[in-house]
Image (tube, rainbow, N blue to C red; front, side, top):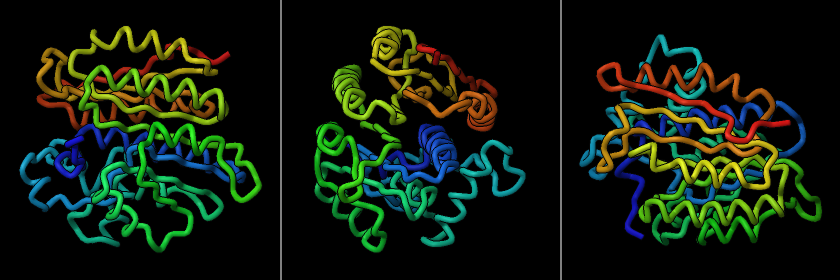
Length: 285
């Protein structure tokens, strides 16, 4: 695998993914019982937007670079506050990956497992969270970890609530969905009450129709699709937007997304062409 998220940190996909991740953490933390979070493709957890990789692509300019320092749209204020907290602790060009955001948003009683297959990225991830006893770093395949680590425990106590973020690089393009759906099917049998969030890129949305049907067939209580586009999805050669399949989303979470997704689309859409979609492909009972 050649993917390095440092080239893409803070881009439009990260804004969607990370804003929704923070909203999920807030919803789950509203109840006192502990939460187990699993980040299957964690990366190094912390990036710098002035390093050579980020500067080479310049993708952050069309993502977090469009989020204002003041007068932030209300739905995006938790995301903007997390960015500000990360930069206060790590410098003005820092950008948090999903492990950092999980550690920021979750509580002392919660536990976080982060998986990263690439040895150098896993080493950096471990160094970034060496002082946080809640965070365990696993240098292993994230899909295999879903089978090994679910259902989760603290000592001999099983944790009944969970959040699993699946954020693969999609180097294999559509084949990645085969791996993700197989892992989800297995995980839902082992830990059916958890919330699962699968991120995916959008190039041509019509190519995703078979994927939506396969997701709707999973043995889950509900399946919600949340997407934003920064330009029309009319080219297979670039990422025009991205989405999250949310399985077993928290109660009334769709209401939260109905304000968040339009705010992202308005802020990040190129030449006013931003768009969003929120759809239950398997509605809760």
